[in-house]
Amino acid sequence: QVQLVESGGRLVQAGGSLRLSCAASGRTSSTYAMGWFRQAPGKEREFVAGISWSGAGLYYADSVKGRFTISRLNGRNTVYLQMNSLKPEDTGVYYCAATPGSVRTIDRGWDYWGQGTQVTVSS
Image 1 (cartoon, rainbow, N blue to C red):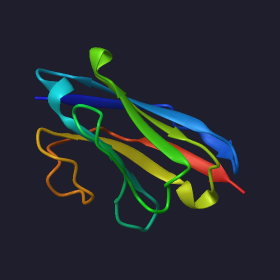
Image 2: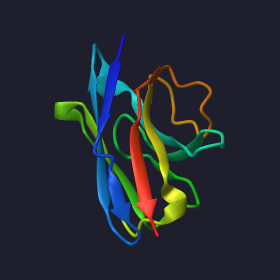
Image 3: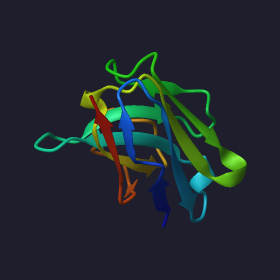
Image 4: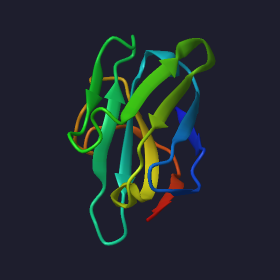
C-alpha cells in the first residue's frame, strides 16, 4: 500500500504561483511513477503532469507546459508541482497519483490516489 497526502492548495490571484506537495508513504513508493491530475467543477479529471520513478521522464499537459514543473525528492518520497503564471482555468481540486508502472496521461491505471487539495485562481 502507498498513502499519498497532498498539500499547498489555496486561493491565489491570476498570475501568481503555488507549489503543491505530495508526501508518499509505504513500501517502495520511491520506485513509483507519480502524477498530478486536476478536476474542475462539472468537468472530468484531467492529467496535469507526470514524472517517472527516476525523475528522468517528465510529462505535461499542453495547457500547463512552460508554466508548471513537476519534480520529486526520492529521499523524502515527495513530489512537487510548481505552478507559475496561474490562470483562472487552473482552478480545481489537484490530486496526486502513483503507479508502479509508467506514467499515464489518463486517470486509468494509476493505483493510488490522494484526497486532493483545492486550488482556486481568482481573476
